[in-house]
Image (tube, rainbow, N blue to C red):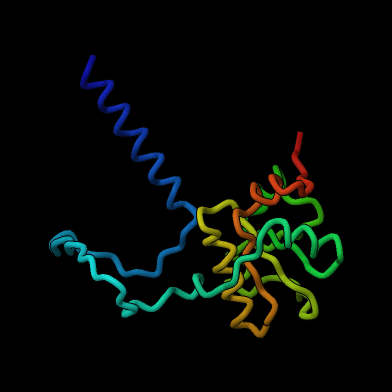
Length: 163
């Protein structure tokens, strides 16, 4: 019975780890199994690694986003798939998936307002990637919502939930 318990724990751990990475889109090439895994090296205070593009996108706090939405200064854009959006989203948000943004399959968004992208990813990864794409398409006022949908809800923002 003990081997079965260990196997179930291992499967649960692997599943949990796969969920953590579910929001990220990788652009790294696959490493072949023949190549050894590099050993991490700790180097203090060397800015030799440039930040990824999504790390350059400014984050906006849920409280500031709520203020801007109430003042009609911003538009909230949910970058998750339509199924997730239909189940739960920030009230008043529009749904334009990250894939649609990448593939340029979306209606024009206002350039005179702040565009606040959100998702449910750790560190707003998908939201920031969407903002990068729009910035490269000429939109200047792009932000990623810090802490995403749940952070907005915790700040008192209205959330739509399907019954």
